Length: 289
Image (tube, rainbow, N blue to C red; front, side):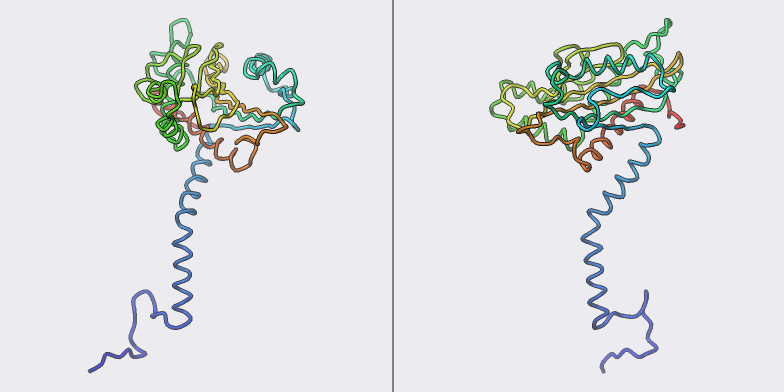
C-alpha cells in the first residue's frame, strides 16, 4: 500500500517545496551559503571597528593633495603638542623627502588612544619622580607580539623561511618570537618582526624604519613607524601608532595607505594593536569616554 500525502498533512517549518518553489528555495540557500564566508567576517570586522572607535581616534592624509607638513592646529590643541608634531615630521620623514616633496607621494595614518590615566598603569612603570620608566618598552613589546600573530606578520615570517638568499634567515625568524620581543630594549639598530629596524628614540616615542634584511626577496615598501606615548597633562597619557609610507610619483606603485580598502584594513589593525598594547600595560579595563 503506497504512502500518500493528503491536503491535511502538516510538515514542520511549513509545507514541502515542490516545483518552482523548490528550485527557488535551493537557489536562495546556495546564495546564502556562498555569502556566509564573506558576510560573517565582514560583520565581525565592522563590529570590531565600532568597538575600537570607542577607544581610539584615527586620522589620515596623503600628500599631495594634503600638505606634507601638518596644518596649523585648532586653538584647542596645546602648544607643546604642536611642537611635538613638528619635531615628529622632522624625525620621521627622511631629509630627501622633506627636501623635494614635489617628487614624492607621502601617505600617513595616525591612531591615537583615549586618555589613559596614569593611575591605571601598572605600578612598575610609575616612578616616585613621575617618570614612566619601562612603559615605552613594555608597550612596544606588547604591540609587536600582537602584530606577530596577524596574517600580515605570518606572511612575512613565511617569506623569511623561504628566503634562501637571506644572509642570516634564522636571525630574521627569531625576531618574530615572543621571547625575543619581550626582552627587546628597542634601542637603535634593533630589528623586530623581520622588517622593522629601530632608527632612534625621543621621549616616549620610537621610530622604526621599514628595512628588510639583506637578501630579502619579498615586497619592499619605503616607510616608517612612529610608536609610543605622549603625556597628557600630569595625570594621563595617550598612546600613538603612526604609519608613514612614501614613494616617488614616477615609476612606483601606490602604497597600501593610498587605497581606501587597504587604508581601512590597516587602520583597523593599527587601532587593534594600540588597544592590545594598552591592555598589557594597565591594570583592569580602561573606561571609554
